[in-house]
Image (cartoon, rainbow, N blue to C red; front, top):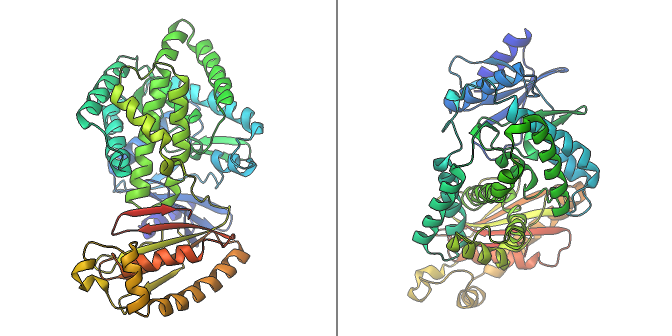
Length: 480
């Protein structure tokens, strides 16, 4: 893969690539690298999904022909799995917004830039739609009822079921079918970007560039503006959302004139916003709970705030969907889902895991490497005794066993000493992540107890935030 990207670089610039660095991965399976020779840089992309690559490349050519601000695709490999892109730098709209935030508040000085983004969105939806060849879209050429049902079931399987909140599946499916039928009737007469959010908007020398549109297709106008304004962690205040929505409505009505009905738009806008929010929650569950990427779980409390807004401000919008309405109400008040998680940059985040050596050692999810793995298998195992077969390291009876019949306390004392010294150094150097994993045979007793005790040991250390995952027993606790 790297050698192919280097070949593309050499073919483009006539010089060897001297340095290759991996760019921070996001939620997809695509891999991006910065290739460099002195001041000359490009971004190399690798993706096994050739159909997705074809969609991205064909969209890019079309958008550039319309004067829309997207990166240039320099070269594509023969296998269509590798391609070389214009380097747009490292600063996204999200990065810029976060850098200006004070606490969780959206920085009002970003409003002019967001209005420029909305101007560009309108151009993508209208100019981008003109003469677009939608045959390259994947998985479908339109955001229709089937696409909507895919998103709603993504939410059901990867968020609702993993959250453990009970629901009536048949009634929920009825609501999904009805909701998809209603939204399928809305005219699909524009290009739908699909992931029009701040992390897919690059800011380079006061220019805005747009990326990650390979999932685009024909769709309704409402979806993309809702995606931007209800982006969870951006936390745009409700009155600012109204101001930006009004700015969008003025712009799109001026451009489309007689072909735009404001009231029709507003009648289904909240439902499109809700569908997008539920799709995003499905992504948080998949990436966070299943793929074990804590960054995505940080968005969950913000998503809960959005749900509260839907339930409290769009009166009657969910009356025709009783089970969905009931389920969202339970979620919006669930204490665990509403609890804020450690944010990058606030403190050193210590991620503690218990695991089974029958599987594998937990991966480094931050891209920073480092950390500790402690083997608990040398400690006497309560799992050998029938009375502990159905207990875990979280139970009081197991704790008594370790305290009275093993040398667990000495083992923990030694490991805590190493960890404390490292935490002190990491905090002084401004590191953001430290990973500590305790393993045993089954990941049920010894490793779970050790991880729990480390979390308690760090409870009063104000220089760190703690995330604990008991992987094998599926017990998640955050920010202890």
